[in-house]
Amino acid sequence: MTEQPNASVTARRMMLGARLRRLREERGFSRADAGYTIRASESKMSRLELGKVSFKERDVADLLVYYGVTDPDERKAVLDLLREANRPAWWREYEDVLPDWFQDYIGLEQAATRIRTYETHFVPGLLQTDAYSRATIASLLPTPSPQDIDRAVALRAARKQLLNRAGSPHVWAVLDEAALRRPVGGDQVRRDQLEHLLKLADQPHVTIQVLPTSRYVHASGGGAFTLLRFAEPDLPDVVYVEHLLGALYIDKPDHVVRYTEVMDRLCVECLTPAKTKDFVLELLAEH
Image 1 (cartoon, rainbow, N blue to C red):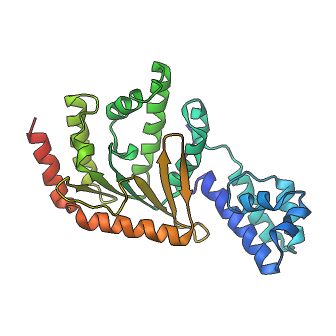
Image 2 (tube, rainbow, N blue to C red; image 1 turned 90 degrees about the vertical axis):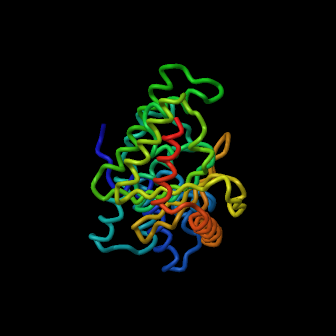
Image 3 (cartoon, one colour; image 1 turned 60 degrees about the vertical axis):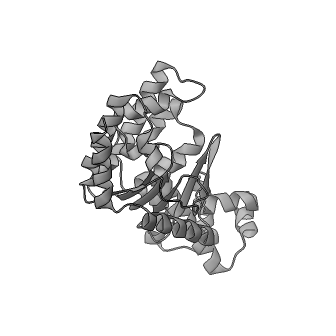
């Protein structure tokens, strides 16, 4: 497997789009003007600047000329970023079991410096044991083939490697109590998963809190979501919300602020990390 750099190709694509947008705005050009230069519609220019589509080197070179970027070092920096953004990502080898709408999430996950997630039904993928992952994936409808289950478990295991690398992100997970009580995979799988959470909670870059069912909090509207933050100044915070047939990527500042407020409220209502460990130990003692 190829090396997984801190700044993923997805993040680099977003960084490149943000840099091109900034250059355009500094010159006072409209998206329509810039698009005409590279034979692209205004909507395509919008997608390029948001990093939602790949770039052609010729188009970027033409835009740099149009924006009056003549300094060789600045041009080289932008074109080097372009080549990095177009480099195939390591997770492309799992395309057979990877939905199109989830590819960007993996790229953002790999680039994030902080991942805050609220989960209502299952332990988050980054915190799962392989056996727990296998049980959740096997429960999907339509039921995947044994080969696809193996591949999907391998993909999730590869994602989890970011917890062990230098400069790993701070993962802060809020779990509904029901997610821990649900007998995913049977008693032994559930028990091993609870023990795994205790080990993860001892790591300085992992924070786990449980929201007891005895505490009623409607702030989230009942849905799971994930907040991702990045070190690069050109990358805004992103909220990821998954649904049955796809996902939403939310980066409008006022919407991100609302989700952040909800996450903060959930964390206040949860058991503290220390009391969460005690709670997990109590769950283990029940069986």
